[in-house]
Amino acid sequence: DLGRALAGELSADLALAPFDFLVIKEISQWTEQETVRLEGQVRFPGEYPIEQGETLSSVIARAGGLTPLAFPQGSVFTRESLKERERRQVEILTDRLKQDLGTLALQAAQASGNGAQQASETLAIGQSLLLDLRNAVPVGRLVIDLDRILAGGPGSAAEADVILKNGDVLRVPQTAQEVTVIGEV
Image 1 (cartoon, rainbow, N blue to C red):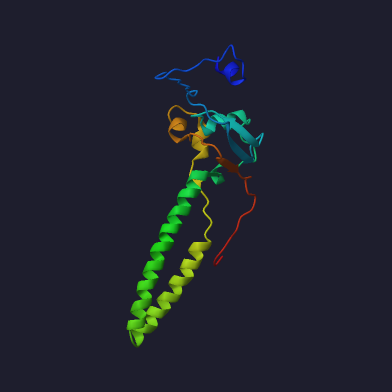
Image 2 (cartoon, rainbow, N blue to C red; image 1 turned 30 degrees about the horizontal axis):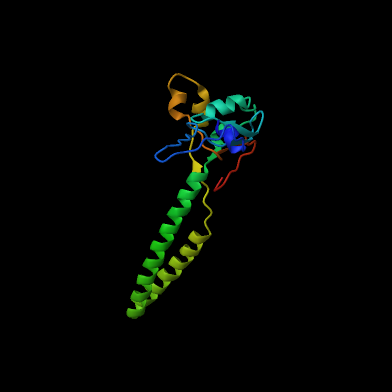
């Protein structure tokens, strides 16, 4: 009884001899409780515990479904691992752009006349783009078809449904009641 032995009970303690093996196995698929968050036009928004392999449709069902004011086509589903991947991709792109701008700066220094002016203008645009890229905030958005997921028809929902991961967030906005008209009307 390992628990009693660790508690210091001498009767439960066992002396180990050379070549003895003590194997303590972990419980298969044991993890900390994982959760997802549902926000907006869900009947009961909030954090929901999930089991391994659970899908978005099952958690929405536990949350009572969507409200009558929900706009599922405007839903935003975000995932932390996607944010991290976006962040790494932005870093790679930033490094590549820095190298390209360095090469362009050398070309501008070597060029004369009109070529030098065009190169310096391109360099200024590139530096502005680099600044924008550095300030970009990764979103981690996964594009989903919430209507199709919730349809529940044979095959359709299963193909579109998302297997959830810890920290996922679904935001369901309210249906907009306004129209914007732009241009020559």
